[in-house]
Amino acid sequence: MNFARTYEWLIGTRYLRSGHRRGFLSFITAISVVGLMLGVAVLVVVMSVMNGFEQELRSRILSVTSHATLMGLEQRLPDWQRAQERALSMPGVREAAPYIESRAMFAAPERNVITGAELRGIDPAQEARLGGLSRVVTQGSLDGLLAGGYRILLGSALASELGVTVGDSVVVIVPEVSVTPVGVEPRRRRFEVAGLFESGMYEYDRGLALVHVADAARLMRFGEAMSGVRLALEDPLAAPSVVRELALELGGGYYVSDWTRIHKNFFRSIQMTKSLLFVILSMIVAIAAFNIVATLVMVVKDKEGDIAILRTFGAGPSNILRVFGVQGAWIGVAGVAGGLVLGTLLAMNLESLVHLLERITGTRFLDAKVYFMSDLPARVQPGDVLQVALVALLLCLLATIYPAWRASRVLPAEALRHD
Image 1 (cartoon, rainbow, N blue to C red):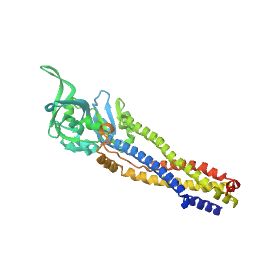
Image 2 (cartoon, helix red, strand yellow):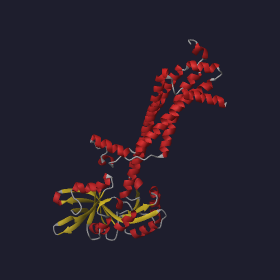
Image 3 (tube, rainbow, N blue to C red):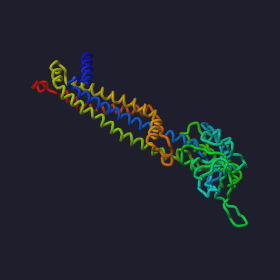
Image 4 (cartoon, rainbow, N blue to C red):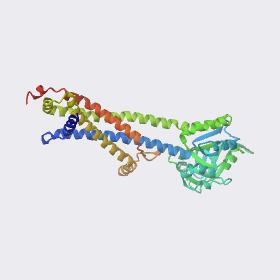
């Protein structure tokens, strides 16, 4: 039995290399390996890009938004201190900070520009402990927001649209009214631009501005109330259950939200796209894998005399089947292994390659206004690599079955009739 397995292995691997008169078969075998390798590499790169895109999107979202939020049903939370204390006592909650949030209009009178965005009042000291916004401030700092100083941090895209920079001033108009001798007017206040932040997410860089929570309360007449409490958790994925538990322990009557709910369409579309791309690109791997069929059929046709001789020496159909099964398996393993290595290397250096192509062509491939980011991140996950390898090897083994079966059915007398 061991001898049989040995000669099947030796003959199968020897058929991978043809002599000088059979160089065409070696060329076809090489083409099959290269085609399979490219198909597997493309699949690995695409899966890695989808993983990197999802991770980068999640990271950038969580840099400017909270893991979870507890809000009052009437847009105000009078007992926010109790909610904050209870949140901080819960396991898994790293930090809890009050905030005020409202839609507002922002005007740069000197440039005759006005636009809308979200105005968020924060406590700089507590916000720094949340650990998100403090990392994306590019000019100035959160400490520049002083109570009573009426200073503001703008997203980079919002500042660009308004045409302002650090040191300039903007007028903030909120949906609250003041009664004056000339009638009812919307409440407004001039703020000095104390800094800029850039999260890499156009949605926030264009649509968010930060002020001190005391200034926001005074401008919007919140008094001692807040809009709600923002939570930072040890495990962001636990946000839905943690914030719901917090609301129940406080007796209910709160509106809760979390980052997975607000942005669920983003991540759902990413997962759906990833699954569809895997299926579609697996077809490319399947086409490359089934090139093995043509290669092995040609080898079987060329080696019919050898097969007949092996049969006359006592080799059975199962032995012949294993000989060509070994050959097909070797082609599959070589193509898949090469594709995994090539795909992993490309994925790990993809950003550099994309930037190089952008410089060569003078074209910007990713517009942050459309794709939410300007880079093409990639993250190689072992689970995806293993999945690609298993699917590709399975396709290769399926492609090997017919040629190997056909070889096992060769009749010695028919094969040697014309020799």
